[in-house]
Image (cartoon, rainbow, N blue to C red):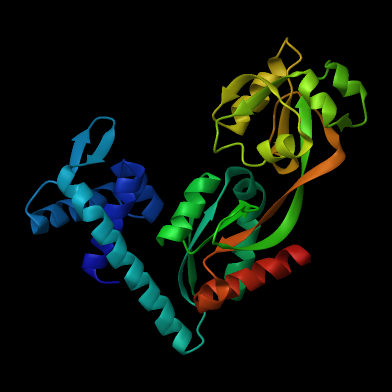
Length: 293
């Protein structure tokens, strides 16, 4: 990787994270190395690309104008690197993967370790985000592939890998805690704590299919906040949560399956695999074998 390309990638990562220290940690550089790279790029451009403040950095108007051009250049270089490796059937290079919190926490460590044991020349860059951020990253070329729950009406390819049961969570003294399962119809009988639109991708289809209108009392930004509020609620509130997320929970909660049972399908999304690089196709095949085993 030449000096200019390194600078461009540092520029993109700093713009994404809005913080020089975080960008340095993400790219395994020193903070001073990132600062020097940005300063060198600003000298080359003849203008300031970032506003600096105690809270971090933000792109200037000049930086915003350069951002899509730099991103396109880096994407093309990445595609060229992968194509050249593919000419010799060499599985190598950088693989940019998107993932969401619960999947990252439970699966990504083992997945990356076993993949690198088979393909040691692959450098994996992992980005955590929401479903929408991952979909946009794949479509926009900043990610090669990503783990999501089933995509509806989207042009991306989706390879299902595992089923994750959706459960009703409540405090231990909740009336529903005495039941072995919770009917879909009864979901409308209790106040619901939900997530902001866009973060409730797995929950809203259940209500749509069942025709139940939830009594939403609070709308929060993330799963951890939802679990915390449910566990301490005095108002008999409930929430719907994937089982994978509950494996990370440290709150005092009771979970019950729905009747009939409901699941989300977790899989690997990418641009059409037949048009993807050898590296992406190899990773997709590896993931299929990993979860089938």
